[in-house]
Image 1 (spheres, rainbow, N blue to C red):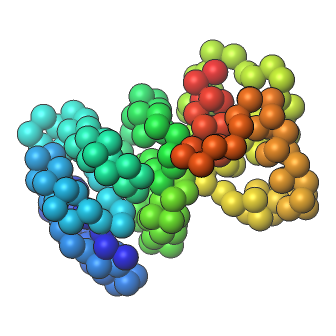
Image 2: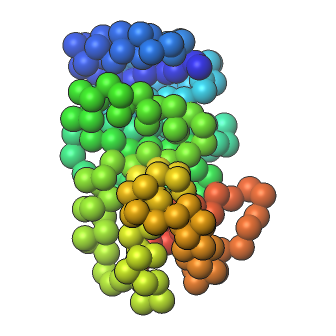
Length: 212
């Protein structure tokens, strides 16, 4: 699996490079600035990009914006963003196109190798990997709950946002996988999300939830 890594701190970039390589990833580029990242994404078209939000030269959201520009030109390009803090807008920008293959992890998660590598693989496979702390913060800030969803359905949505599969949700909630499938079908129905070939209903449901 081919990876482009963007991180401006040398020690962290070097450590992540070693970690990814040790777990069988093919690191095709490791860069430190926004322009270098954008060039690497267009040149290599990797299976997944692991991107620090704040990169030189602006050290604001240079990394995220470079990744979003590339993702618009290369639809579905998997992007896993790393951030020091929870930024509500960044998470929403990532989810906005509804296509999936996105993730948002706090940097502290990279110190758990298994968790980090699992997130990279999940995003590369077209899923989502949203940090539990990010989801908690976003849900806490929403203006109002979705009135038509039950508490159980909102719980299922929160786990969907983390990137959990139906089986993982069933395990966390101690219910059957069939029951999870029914909850998700009900969520899609209540949110009016019809199945369409170019959209990921799980991502659209999560985005709808967070925006409310």
